[in-house]
Length: 407
Figure 1 (cartoon, one colour):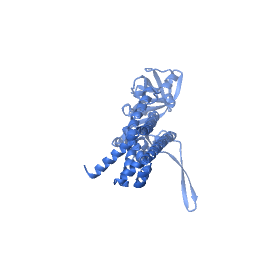
Figure 2 (figure 1 turned 45 degrees about the horizontal axis):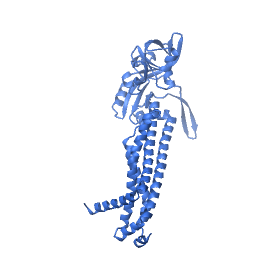
Figure 3 (figure 1 turned 90 degrees about the vertical axis):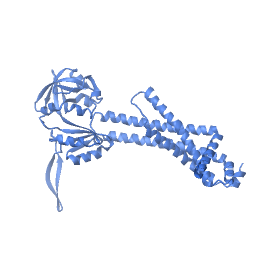
Figure 4 (figure 1 turned 135 degrees about the horizontal axis):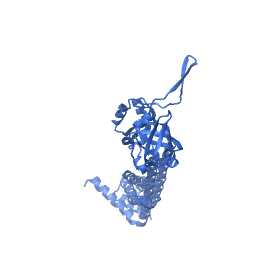
């Protein structure tokens, strides 16, 4: 054992001896640290679970990024401004536009690892009829195998099965109620220009969103191309990415790469994004104040411990201990208190999460990621060291003669 290791071992023994001499005090501060750590772990896991549930509910029914044909603009007469002439543009009403040669674009996007799914779509307005009942809807022509990686339709089927072909379609649950439809029933789809198709309802889905469940119909891609007079073309490419919070950056990249107009979920759901950011800020503030409360508790205990150990500190200084060694003794004591409390706090955090998942309202599932517990342990130890710094500095400055005479 080296000299440095021996000194550290001795300092640890002294710090442990100081803690053991007052077990009640050590127990109380350890409980306080454990409670703080458990709260940090549980609140972090709860907020993460709430955020993930919100994202899944909202983005589970839409793509992260959508590529469409370029926008159309009206050119206005030039306006003179001093020596310059400015040509004004205003965006015009966008008719249904097609993307040709989309197979090559899709193949290029498939080769990008960060894009987890790419699917073509043909989307447009139509009218559905069953008997004397009719409803205005949006038809979505999809590649069934590709699209289920964008939106998990199979797990949201209430009646029937996930089957899309030239004769089989999926409709929303609210639309099925309005038209009195069940799986296996027939209905007629009529496009804006009068093209019609007689299809069979193979499944009824429920996404939990009124707009989707009452107006959306999913049909075969080629069938939609025929109905909307877009044979060979599509209206968009829908993309899913691995990190949803990089949608803006990826949208800009894909716009430069393809030259198409790009939309992303962050711009389309600004209120949701603000809510998610507010949740994250709230979590950080709770962790900060809980950590501050734990730090003040450790600092107060360490201050009392320094006063109680004044005589012992004087003896150690008289025996040749340096100020740095005395400083390290109390810093180690703070770190040990933080570590002990954090270990019990991690167990308490897991218990709280288990109780929430098992006996709560079960609104959503909460899981504790390993990095959360490691972060909580690191915070507790660092808080213990920082809280002990001032009392430890005070103890290291004691004059040996005066400290020994202290009663």
